[in-house]
Structure formats: structure tokens, C-alpha cells
Image (tube, rainbow, N blue to C red; front, side):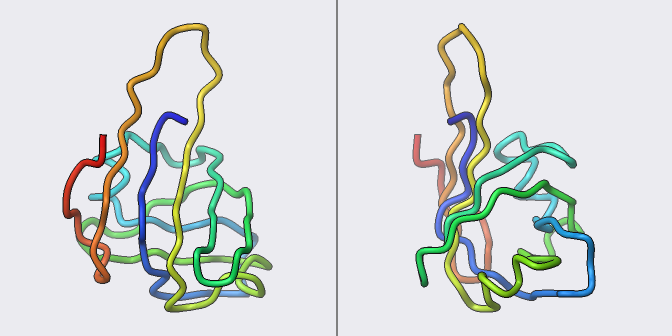
Amino acid sequence: MRSKIHKARVTKTNLNYEGSIGIDRALTKKVDFRPGEKVLVVDNTNGSRIETYIIEEKENSGNIVIYGGAAHLIKKGDEVIIMGFEMTNKQLKPKSILVNKKNRFVKYLF
């Protein structure tokens, strides 16, 4: 694991999109996520897991948006963990952040 946003809340879903997860740009910058990057999204509310790619939402909006068919599995208000991975031979120093119920940065976890 290279990066993680822990305990984010889904603020919106939109079935009428090709598929992805929208993440507040302020949060993507904190953990070095990049638009188009593949991530694993784990729904702590119902146990669903999806793999998708990132699009950035407006900075400081607090938005975590599930787009496309994944909106059948992950609903508005669900608590999620968003993880990015990197294949490498070098030792990684992961960036992991905790956010509050409004998806605002609280602290680095490690």
C-alpha cells in the first residue's frame, strides 16, 4: 500500500457516469493520489469492495462521489477506505490519513 484515506464518507452517488470515484482534491494531494490512478475502495458500512480510478472533485469540497455501476454497491453516507498501491522493489513509506465525517483532514496515521 502506498496511500490511504481512512473513514471517508460518501457524499453523493451518480449512476449515470462511466464509472470512477471522485475525491476532494485537497485529500488527493495529502496522500499523493493522481487522477486516473487505480484504487481499491472498501465499504466499511456493508463490506463491498470495488476497484476503480480516481477523478478529482473540487478542492476543499469534502466530496467523495461514487460514479457508475458501483453506486449500486456503495451508497451515500457509507464509510469507506480508499487505498492506492504501487508495485516496486524499494521500501515504501505509505501516506495514510484519517478524515472526519465531513471528509476533512484530521491527522496522518503513519
